[in-house]
Length: 43
Image 1: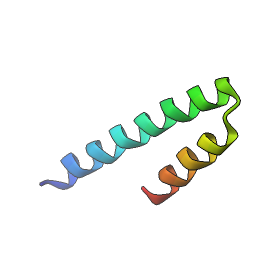
Image 2: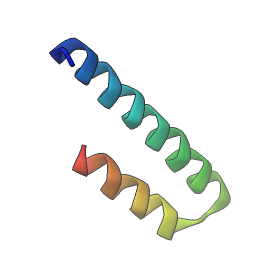
Image 3: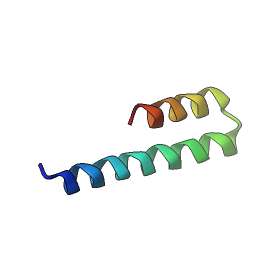
């Protein structure tokens, strides 16, 4: 896998976590917000 492909894959994963985080914020699910933020930090 090329570096470009790896970077795009990580970007897409980060975007997915960000969308989930936004939904959790809208629902007031702060535990899930924290989980999403932790997952993004791991990237």
